[in-house]
Image (cartoon, rainbow, N blue to C red; front, top):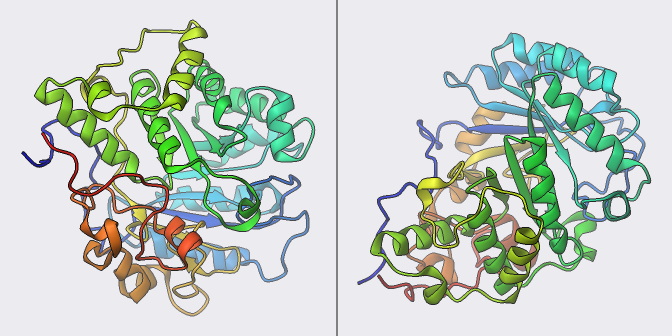
Length: 396
């Protein structure tokens, strides 16, 4: 029998039409940043760009987002490093005055002092995203290109949680960081994060020079993520085929089959699981569990489909990892660009997918990373090269 959607929920669905408006808007306030991260999509430098959106233009952007109705889109202020802008607190406060849930994604630098974290909270930010790519100073600071970043980030995380903010911990995943994940999972659990988000490498910006995991290794990583999502809320960014793995695992669970025998994970899965299990933290993870015990199923949004990115100069892109501009808010509102641009409409239409992504029975669940398809193949509608699934081969 061919695959059918399992009864267990493997994704969270947005309760409005994503053709009409986004669920989340990420605004890159600036590309200025004092870190020198190996993966940086923005290729950030310490100096600010004279063409950045002004405070007035930023408030007009926030007004437009707030006009989209209820529930209003989530807004995340990112960079570069948003702490490089002197109007950060003013814009957080303005965003919150419009009723927008507002998060901030600062960099782990001396600018992110405990006082700054507290001020960000008092200005109205409801959440903070911080990045740790290694579980100790040596590994993280090497990846971020600045000594002391690990301790500054960890201090900021503790302060943010103490101040009542929801904390998302972000970790970049490539060949040089993947074996850090079990220890980072332990750290995420100890911090009590609302989400641990793994960012799979997309070849853009400085990330072009890093080595990505193979498609088989990514499949192993997904199975590790399904396992630990019993105790840690896990999100995998730029990897919608994680939702396919969740659906397959749920379908096998409902049929009473052993997923390990059917899906045959590879060496990386066992290495990650063994390292995590040897850390001795609990509760115990059940390798045969179904999705009922998962902390938080992923949200069913993709680049351009529920997700919009505004650059520091006002360009509207489907994602920060898909740097194609569909228009600029200096000339047309984000609300209009998102709804009417051919680029965004194309990304919301799964019938435009080519190759095996177009043939795949899971393309309604997944859709593949359009950012990676573009980064590797220069074609937003092509296959996601990080997926090893052969359409039609999963039978129940």
